[in-house]
Length: 159
Image 1 (cartoon, helix red, strand yellow):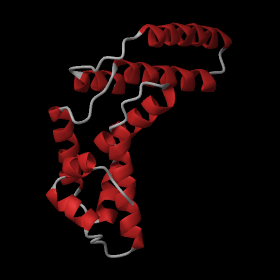
Image 2: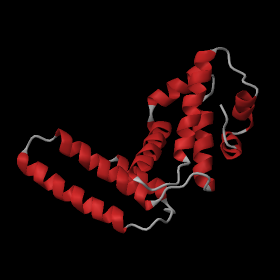
Image 3: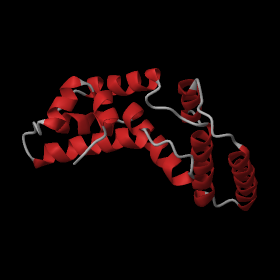
Image 4: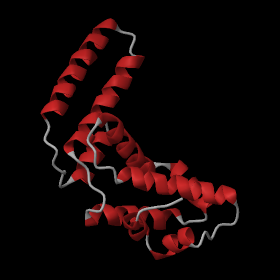
């Protein structure tokens, strides 16, 4: 599999060396390494459309908060803290950025999932109105990057 030089630089010397030399014990380890690298690639998506935004935010949460991520790292033969630190370093340096639309699509999706599971008709009406308002916000949102998105993501995670 071919990865961009930017992704390889972002991953650091040890991980990049493992990737380029195909230094893996077996095919399962290779598979899990590619799962991690795909998540990093998803976090580098710049498009602000719904699908891309959801892929980006899902990958972000998986890397930042998931116990599954830690297990996958162990299966890949990589230290989870080292991989996460590479991710956080990329966030701080601006190699991985988020736009306002990425947040808004994530919020929209959370509302949509709540609507989908809600049985109370009054609450469904309220959620539909909220969805319409959120869609309007998305359509009016600029395409600029968010400067302090770590705090914004922490607020969203508490919803």
